[in-house]
Length: 298
Image 1 (spheres, rainbow, N blue to C red):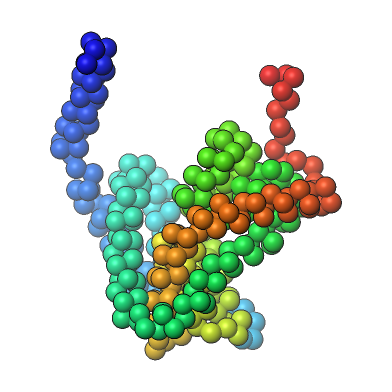
Image 2 (spheres, rainbow, N blue to C red; image 1 turned 30 degrees about the vertical axis):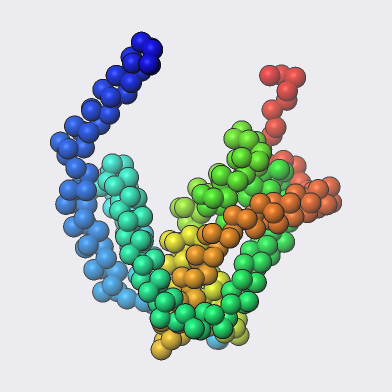
């Protein structure tokens, strides 16, 4: 090992030791005021309970407690008198959310195991429903072009824009490409309002579409644990008595979407999105929302 490498290693150890000391000095998981606040919000949300709003005859939207906790949590974060919920606590809560979603995934895995014979009987349907993700391209791409997006639309509309899909787009087009900007925008918007949107959308679908409960359960498995949980709540509320089977289909479908979805994006979704873009952009494209930098002025 050369002297330069030794110096670099020593610097790394110095920063690592500082980080370890900072963590040991005050463990972020011991922020008891944050945990107590989350507990209070959860109790308030569960006390309110689900609320059903009838939009039209036969179409009812179920507002689940998950939505209350998100709104109350955002209000606590933005309220200036509440000084113990700040950016640091939001980062701790983000890590805790990923930890607790693991418990939900374990519960769905147990339900899948209990209904394994039913899952085997529905095997072809579970696999073929993954192709349904391609239908979003047919709807979302024309809308994006009508709104004035150019190649950003390729990144926005090929998938739901979770971490695996973001990695695929960056690897293919580059970090600074319009396609990467599009999928980053989708990732941010999906993280902020994706769970709220899919919860409302699922409530409308289960009350207006004459489909089998297992179809709604499979459709909730989009490859995101938080969105899967948000879509699962209204589905369970709409079809009482078969909760275990619905959880089984939702959990297994989400697992398939997460593991197989990346290959669908690579081999089917991205090529299809590009081909449709070149077909539709000259016909329905509008003036660009994001102006491209002129290379001559660079």
